[in-house]
Image 1 (tube, rainbow, N blue to C red):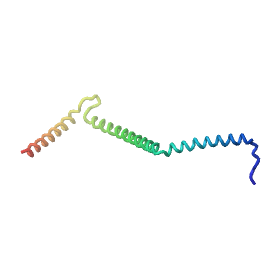
Image 2: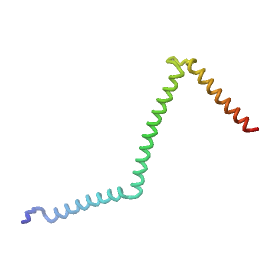
Image 3: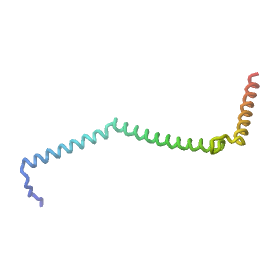
Length: 109
């Protein structure tokens, strides 16, 4: 058996219906904005940008750490170069550049 003991006046019922329609209209408007293609594309772009920013930030930290570790191999705590490590590397670089120049010269003739 249905409960038919509603004590509201017809004006109260109409006001309640009007309020519920307004709430429903707002909800439908919000849903319309959420499913609009521009909103979906904008949300997707924002997620991609956030992911790229996060990835780039992590990459920056890793590169910075690697550079610091390499630098620590060639510079002491005071900032002075460690000649026992710099000189051999410089000689190797000069040798490689010399070999490349020699190879280019031979190919040129």
